[in-house]
Amino acid sequence: MTEVKTKHLVHYIPTIENKKWVTRNTKNHGGLHRQEEFRKGIKMLEHCAHHFRNPRLFHLCFTGADLDTYQLVMQRFCRVLTAEKVDYRYKAVRELDSEKGLHFHVMIVLGAGNRQTHRFITSSNEDGKVENVSALRKAVIHTWNECQALKYRVNPPRSMSGKTSFLQFNQSNMEMFHEAAEWLSYIYKSRSKPESGMIYFSGRPSRKATTGKTYT
Image (cartoon, rainbow, N blue to C red; front, side, top):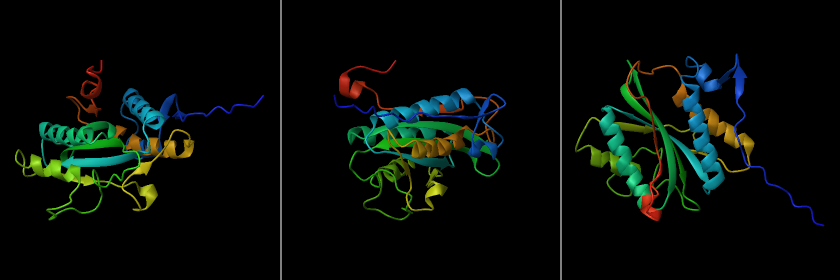
């Protein structure tokens, strides 16, 4: 009989200190804010690794506006992703500090298959461009109608030394998956978290667009 090799899918193996999850990122910024929220982020990454084709993780940071504006620009951006049939999921967090004021971090995974993702998100400076800007840039420009002070930045992973604006992972490479999880953990740090109000947010396509059903 021919032996059938079982393919082991990636999964997260946490580093634990004093019965709590820790990461390099969170240890440098006051520790992990809410472990249960980080767990939800890890579940999102695992889903994307197992089901998306060529999943890529990006880090967006919006500043200069209020929460409603940040959510509005993400709605507009994700509407384009849905129309283009790009798989996506994201986790986001509202933060507040003296440097950035009220700002919004988004860690979003795109599964664009064999297509390039720079048409949707790029870390290149798009200021002043009027043609061939990314879908994210178009969503921001559209939202200036509501808030001209809105700004954003695509923060590339330091581990890639500026080579790409994203981390790409897959369903079998544990090392790359854990690198993505480490990067994701940044938004779950204790530093800069508001003392009240809703802090954590998430987004994914509605099944209604393709199946007539909605998520529960």
